[in-house]
Amino acid sequence: MNILAMDLGTSSVRGLVLDEDTQPVPGALARRRVSLAIGDDGTGTLDGPAYLACLVECLDELAEAGHLRDVSLVAMSGQWHSVLPLAASGEPLGPAITWLDTRPVPPASAVGPADADAYHQRTGTWWHRGYWSVRLPWLRERAGSPVARFIGLVEYVLGELLDEAPMSISQASGTGLLDLRTLAWDEEALALAGVRAEDLPALAPLQWQGRLRPAHAKRWPGLAGVPWSAPVGDGGASNVGSGCVDPTRAAVTVGTSAAVRLMQRVPAGQELPHLPERLWRYRVDHDHVVTGAAYSSGGNLFAWANRELRLPVGAELDAALALVPAGGGRPADPRFGGDRPPGLAPAGSGRLGGLSFGTTAVDILAGLMQGLCEMVAEDLDVLESTVDRQVAVVLGGGAVAASVWWRQAFATAFAPRKVSHQRNPEIGATGAALVALGRFESAVELADIGRTDELVSPTTTGRPHPQYPS
Image 1 (tube, rainbow, N blue to C red):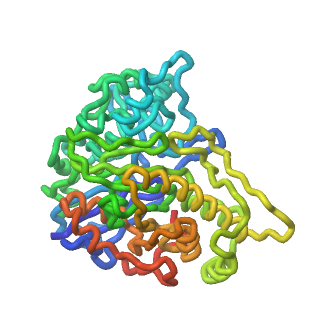
Image 2 (cartoon, one colour):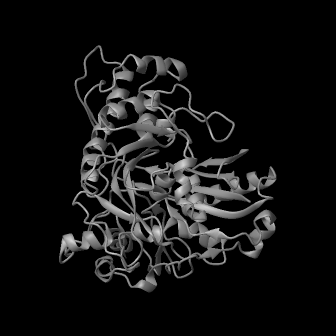
């Protein structure tokens, strides 16, 4: 049994085929970069139809190469928090705003939750621009036409492909409108968002599976009748793909953005552990939650530095970074894209310090990388307070898979904890497949864990991956 694992990210759409042990089928990877519109005003949007076209191209490529012939299951990791408004016809009334968008603000007359802490404990989120409780009124005001419904980018894409596309519990938890214990829309959150449950996607029941529409089944006959599992939020999928499925190990993932997360088994209906004020909590599925903190900067720091600072490339860059001690570089605040919840710093909050005529582009890059390490280390301390113990850390994601220096900088910032790294850069897609199969226990033994000082990172595709991918 092969599994088609899709990763609907912010910077790219990827599809890869895994065997029954969730190991990659050689060469069976298709990837398309997507065009993220960003602006100094905090804009961070994706065009829904263009995004769908990228996914279709990935499926076409895999089909043409014969990689979809033996697929028996489709699993998907999808970005949390994105939302787009729909007209009564089902057409988008604008682009999808992503986690990166910092523009939404509450209406001037709006009042937040009656009990902010109780709201935080129930939904795992805050009344904040990053969630639908603030985003939906802001989008409705700017739409220009009546909004019939609101939908996530993942549900929009699946709605165009499948016979039905309810919102998974995992994706719903990323909206900030879900009661994490009862797995129903939270009434106070709906009131803050100014919507009714019928204005939102239906929630997918336990064990839900979808099928391709007949027209699409003709286009991709290898997927005709193949079940599609409920999408898993990208952060939860990355934890599973990193082998961090219990409270003994935290996952630190660096892709376009970055996050630190700890996963626990808390079945639906069971009382949730207390959530510290500065951490969020979402659902991986009906039985598991993930708690953590996220940052607007990650691989995009390197992308910016590479574009603007004329960095050396390849081995020359590695050699130059090797001369900068871990913990070195110039003092920097890496919040170029502003804060993720619960912070409120706007886009453009990045800072560089300690510059001199002797400062090099590599010094600046190292400072930005180190700045992120320090932010994550502070939140890791808070995360450990929820389990009253020191945890091991597994680094994952394309950005750290490609950079020995960044891995070692994280290890220095997290000392004396044990720090290792997941060498598979496709942890989101792999994790989604493991969740779809219910193989949480296997995640630890299947994880390709390596030392942080390894010079060569194996790939899952038989082809070299780009250096510091976003």
